[in-house]
Structure formats: structure tokens, C-alpha cells
Image (cartoon, rainbow over all chains, first blue to last red; front, side):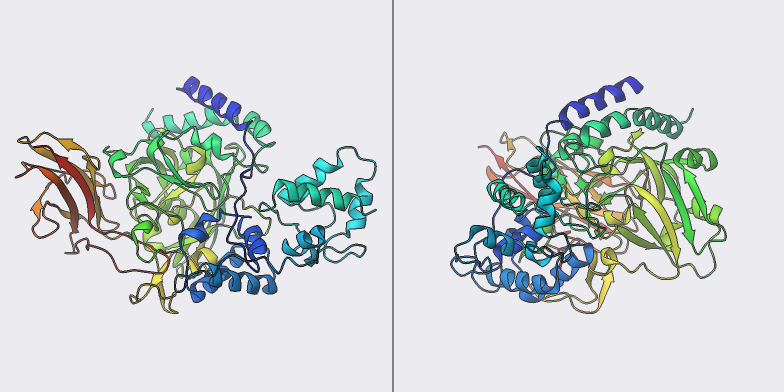
Length: 193
Length: 395
């Protein structure tokens, strides 16, 4: 029986090596004001199918968001209000969803980086040159200066979040970012020295 | 050597390989946790995975035609990630309203208290949720499947609490699990149960499932088993028991696992007056035949199923072959552990060829029958509507 157990574990070891913590496929909600922020916050802990499968009333979404915040979702009251408006517009059981539109909250003119920073809530904690909650983008770039492995390290930090590098306020993970957007952000941050 | 003790030792053997597992796994799953694919290795290939994060999966009714649910068929329901815990380092603390705070290793528990093995139902509160209309929020459990009835091994929670000495004003016992969330600020999974249920001789601190150490995803190395009650009461990866003078107040008590005190209209939001989800109402399912099974005309059909209730006894199981107009008693087995499901069989000869619907419903000893469809509630708990299986009788 012990042997049997150990053989089973060896199987686990082989398999575990091939797997990533986050799903690689990109999952999107209906595009609309606040959709990017909603995707990014909700996907920290669960898949978006939970939203698509069961549209709720505005009151239920409000309860739901309160519960998710209590469970630990890192989101400000302002972000919560945006997400509530988005969900009760596009995933409301009492009225049909409007046609998809641009995520106007991902504003920033024609600058794709500004759009990403705004839509993903980065700007809430980071600015170009001043420390807000987290380090400035300049500080991050300087920390990694001369490090050949910097792009991988920073990408992992943005994707998985972390704590302790710059203080004890945790950086939330960003599972909703596409690989292309992640690469774009990493390149931009590292160029901010 | 009795069975539980042997199970326990097997658990120690499994733990020996843990360090190596963690090293490989650390590159792929968040630190200290197991990747989903590693967990899926221990499950039937046909398991339906309802979500990856958190990991949830189950098998439909016709995959449950077993008196004791095999481990590879037991449903999976995580709230957070699956921790990889070292049994040698693991401790169970008992604190709160006790005469003496205690801390046990898993080995201490096995040495100090009478070991117990019993079969008991566990069913997720949301089991059957996808049958509710309108759709309720949460894991999309199929109409059947978010439940199972394996055999558990461990010690009585009551014995552990008595060793610590429960104070007079104790009312609830909270279990806390060691499952980590995706963010450092994730609320820990803490649920409490009333003292009377904690002291029930069938409520266990368990380390074994079906004669083996608990599989990782089912709470290795230690969990609560509160049979008959919603699965969330049976805290996995148990590390702390806190004796309280009132129900624990936290998000897994206040925002989840609650139902309206009085029924609300379908689609209404949760009213202010709620009650905690505890024992499952009476429920049954047809485990054979499978949906769309074909039978030769002129022969007889044997229907097999399982029936259970969270508290009390299953009194009756019935089958209808005419869409619920008339019901025939099935032969119900009454043997088994108090919180184990009961099997039933019903044999009949169909009167004519064609598509035939079988319906099952059970009654409990208090005179409650399964409804055609239970009253709707915002979080989609306690689905126990009649179970329906269609088959084909050939001409």
C-alpha cells in the first residue's frame, strides 16, 4: 500500500511540472465602459463564466460585490462603483445588454500605454516619478537596470502580484492582462529610468 | 491494527514525498499550493470540471451507482487554492471558550482519542444550482453530482473539545482551514457550527477517506466532517478550532451559505432576514439507468437510486413513470451509518414502447417530501427537486 502511494505521487510530480498557475487562454466580457477593470479584478480569483452564466439584478450585483470585497478582492470603492455599473448594464437579468462599445474608461487618447494603465487600475498605486502606494515606474526601472532577466521578473510580478519588494502593501495579481499587453507594459516600465 | 490506524500510517508514508512535490510544483502553481492538473490525476477522467479557479468538479447521477462513493468520484469544491501541507508540521489548535487551549499533531489525535470510521454524506450547499430558474449566482453545479457518501476515518470532534473543556457559555465551534487565496488579503475560510452538532458523535476530525489518507484536494492532512450538512461546514485543511458564544461573524458566514428566512420571489435579492444553511433537506437521485438508456420491449426495467436527508431518516423513496401523477414505492434499504445515504430499487414492466420518463422523490421521517422544484433563493442553495431520467423502450 505504501508503494502504491509513492507511485501515485511520482505521477503527480511529472504532471505538475507542465502546468501554469493561471489559465493561458484569454477570457473577455462584453466590451463596454469598465469591462477591462471588471475582467481584471474578477479574474484574480475566478473565471468570467460565473458572470456570463448568471446575470443578476443590480441589487444582487451590489451584494455580490460586497461579498467579493469581504473575501479579499483588492478594489477601491471607486473601482467597485465602476464594476457595479458595468455588470448591471451588461449582465442584468432584468434587461438585455446593450451592443458592445469601446471601454471608454480605458481612456488615454491614442496612447496605448495610458489606456492600459487606466483600464487595469495601475494608476491607482503607481505614477511616473512619485511614490504613491507602490513605487514609481521610474523606481521600478532603476531597480531592474542592468538585469538581463528583468523582463521576465517584472512580467511575473505584474501577472502574479507580490509583496515585500517595496513594502508590505501587496500588489494584486493581474490574470486578465493579455500576454501582448503584458509585454507592452513591461517594455514601457523598464524604459522609464 | 484497526482500519483507521492503518489509514493513518499510510498518510505518514504519503507525506514523505511532499517536499519533492512542493519543489517541482512551486514553479507552476503559487507557492505552497498544488496545481489543478495534479489534483485531476486523482479523479475519474470523465469528471466534469465546472471551474478551474477555484477548482470545482463533479459527476452526474448515473456515475454514482455505488453504495460507498469511491474517492475518484467524490466532488471537488474549493473556495480558494489547494495547499500542500506537511503532515509532520501540521498542528490542530483548540482555543476560545475552553478551559485549556490545546494543540495537537495529527499523530497526537490518533494516539489520544478513540478512532472512528463511518460513512457520511457531504453535499455542497449549491449542489443542483443550475436547475434553478432564473439562474442563481455561483458554481454551476449540475442538477445532481455535487455530493458523495464516502467512508471517513478520524476521531470525534466531541472528544477533542471535551479534552480542552468546553466552557458553559459556548454556543458555536468555528473551523478554520489553511487554504490560501490568490491575494495576500484573501479572507480565510472560517465557518462555525452549533455546539450540539459539534458534539454529535458522527461529527469527525478526519484524516482518512475510504481507507486512504485524505487526498490533497479533500483536506489533507486533516478536515472536519459534518455529515448531512452543507459541505462548507466540513472545513478542509483544518488547523484551528475556536469555541465561540455565538456564530462566527465573517464573510463565509454572513454573505455566503445563507438563505432567506421566508421565501422570496424568484429573482429578488437577499432580504435582510436570513438563516444559515445547515442540514440538507430530503433528496434522492436515480443512479441507474443512465439518461437515454435503451431497453428491449417486453422486458422489465430495474431502477436504482440513492436517497438521503441531512437530519432524521429517509422514510420512503418513490418512482413515478407518469410525470408525477402517481407514485410507486421503491424498495428502500434502511441499513447503514446514521448520515449515510440509502439505496433503493424499483422494478417494473413498461406498458408501451417509446420514450419514458422516470421520476424519483423521497420522504423523510418528519413527513417532508421532495418538491417538484424547491423554492428559489438568491444564492441557489438546497436544490432538491424530483430527479428526472428519460429512457427509451424499444418496440
